[in-house]
Length: 110
Length: 138
Image (cartoon, rainbow over all chains, first blue to last red; front, side):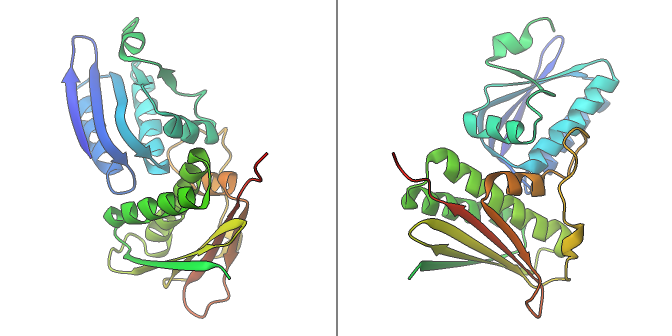
């Protein structure tokens, strides 16, 4: 798995490539923590190239959501393939996360 | 008689991908839809992750045995570990309204599989049976 961070004026975009599972989710968490510690509280996660996500990946994002909310920031996810949407829906977290179709929509209002 | 496939991996998270690739391939080859194949793969992956996290407490040098039986009407996966005995009564999914990191694995497994059966009869370790039935076409 690879993560590129694209720091923009009002937000940071994490572009993740590969599977987010028990092996790789700690890497996602480390990256999110580093951004939050540097006061990046508006985070976007680009799922275009995320091929798989398990509950450890979801847990990492729940933690990120709580951190950004606590700091009056936003966490937005976009371009999720159906199999990954299904994981959020099965967890009933599709209503908790701010999920967008594309980057343009996710950036709106940030 | 069911065809059988056996996979053994060390309890190292980086090897979970081997199990996922195998289960996904076998599910699709049996005729499960891509959606069902993804869900079965997720369930088996979550169960293996639980073994690594809870039974082996993160140790990466233990054994996980995955037995896959291809029946004409269902896929059966038996996961065996050789760690400490798990108290089956303590295995439960959390309340979904309680939004917090973690605790989702068991819920996901139970949501997507038709049978989830924790057996504690083996002399050493634990055994989990997961079954998914093929949907009848038409």
